[in-house]
Length: 319
Image (tube, rainbow, N blue to C red):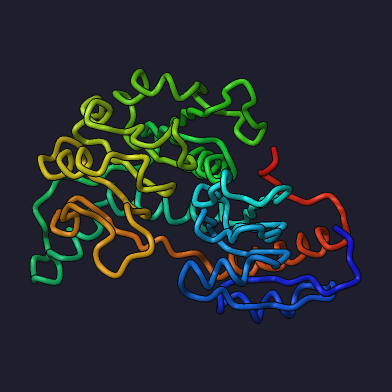
């Protein structure tokens, strides 16, 4: 796209001032309104939508916009590709692998070291909580599902902790060079054969028809009763009822959950009372300041490229 007119950008109210300051080409920035009808009206002639999703009800009859949808994160599954105007492109953005990996490792340590149980006992005046000796991360078996930006970073941290790291990926034939010392690499179809050995299972995959409910009752039953599962990907990758029952009955050791089952939400982001379980570490899926500081300048650069008719970075549609 090349034009002498200012490009029209539509985005969330919190992102509007940042994009307005960072985008270099002539532009205007409008805030995404509430209500599908109003959104459809605003998007009908816009050039760029910077948002996490797009649905059919947002496209007005005969609308030509948006011409570019730029996700504010790596995930683009809330964007209905079948509803896009002809020629619309979709891009995503990364920069989150360090922050997400830190959250994953935090969950792993909190579970392995019984951080919250010991803290609670000490606060009750029990200065010598009666529980088994703690164990080290070294030589524990870490199974990482996904070898994208996050998965590779988790592998790197696992190797630093001298864990035995195995990774399963959707493209095992294209394993990235960043993970050279893996104990083993395989496809997702090999999950059942690796789960029984794992002390930690960390999910770092996008949601797709292939991955939704990939961990269910059968898979959880294959895990050790002492094993922990950590999800920093999408809640839908683990069947909610099966996970709750496995945790409630202590079928597995515990879970670190950074992602949940409904977004956005006013009430609990789950249907089962995970908050009542003592073997769950609950996270709020919060991005780091550093991730945000990286992402919006990168999005702005891509908008500039789009306006100048230059190749886009991280284009995911059309593939």
